Image 1: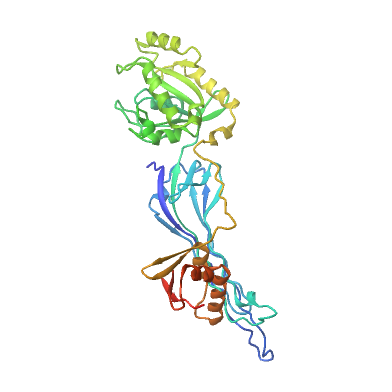
Image 2: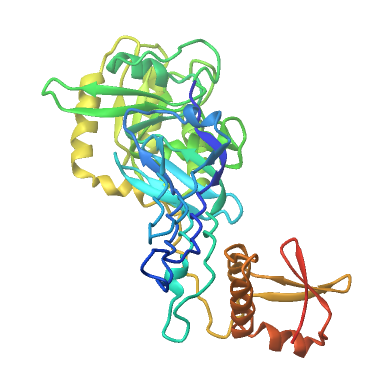
Length: 424
C-alpha cells in the first residue's frame, strides 16, 4: 500500500532526575555532597532509508515516545543517557509542525538525519550546586521534560523524470514499456492512484528513474480530483515529460489538454512551472495522430516534441536517450529548491518578557515556557529547592510585575495546574 501522508505525536524522553546525596564513610564525617546528575532523555530522530518507498510503517504508530534518562546516584554517579528513537523514512519526506505549519526537516538523501523532538537534559545533582558560600546544598533538580510535537510527514516521490498529463493518455503504458515496473493499466480514468517508479536502462548502461504520476484534471491545483497529491510528487522531479494523447482518442483536443495541465502547474508552483519540460506525443500508431500532431507543432514551435507509441514501442529509443542526456545537463540540487519553503528568522527582542501574567477568576495565572520548565524541574519536597525556585522567579521580575498589577500578599498564583499563595 502506498502511503504518502501520516500524522504523529512525538514525545521525547524526559531527563533523568538529579540526586541529593552526601558522602558517608567511616573516617570522612564531613564528606560533602556527592549526588550525581541525571542522564539525558532520548531524542526522536528521523533518518532516510533508500530501501523504503512509502510511509506505511508509520501509519500505525500514532504516538512515538522516547525513554527517560537514568536518574543520578550517590558517589557522583551520573545517570545513563536514554537511547534515541530512530524512525526510518523514504527519501523525499518532509516533516511539518502541525501547530505552526513550519517545515522542521526536508529529508532527501540516504542516511540523512534530523532531530525532530529533543530529549530533556538531566537534572543536576546537589554536587553541581556546591559553592564556597554553600558547600553542602541540600537540593537537586528534576530532569527537564522532553519536547512534545505534533507533526505531519509528507512524502514527495523523488524521480529523475515525472510523467504528467491527463488521465488515460498512456503514462502507465509508457512506464511499463521502458522499465520493469508493473503499474496497473485499465481503460478507465484514475487507474493510477499513487506514483509508480521504474528504472530505465539504456543500451549504453546509463540509467534514470521514471515516475508515472496520477492523472490531472482541471482544478487540480485547488485539490480537484487527485489534485495536490499529484502536484507535490511532480515537484520532486528534474524533468517533466508531458504525455499527450495526440490522437485524441476520447474526443479531447490535445492542445486544450496541454493548456489545462500547464495552467494547473503554474497555479501550484513557480518552481514546478519552470522545470525543464518535454512533450511526449503518444499514440502515433492511431489514424488521427498526424493531423493533431501537425496542429500542435504549429501552435508550439519552440517545444521539444517526441512522437511515440507506448503500445508498439515506436519512437521510444530517441525519447529515452534525449531524457538521459538532458538529465546530465541538470544539476541534481535543482529539485530541492522548492519555493514553498521560505527561510524563517525568529527575532527575540531583549525587552520581551519570557512570561505572561493574567487574572482569571481571582487567581493570578503565570504562563511561559521558561517558568513552566523551571517549575517542572524543581523538587518541591526539598526546602532549599523551594527557596531557589522563589529566588529564580524574583530574578525574572515576576514579583515586581505582580505588585505592579495590584497583587497583594495572600493572593493565589497558578502555574500549570498548581496554585500557590503569593508572599512578598
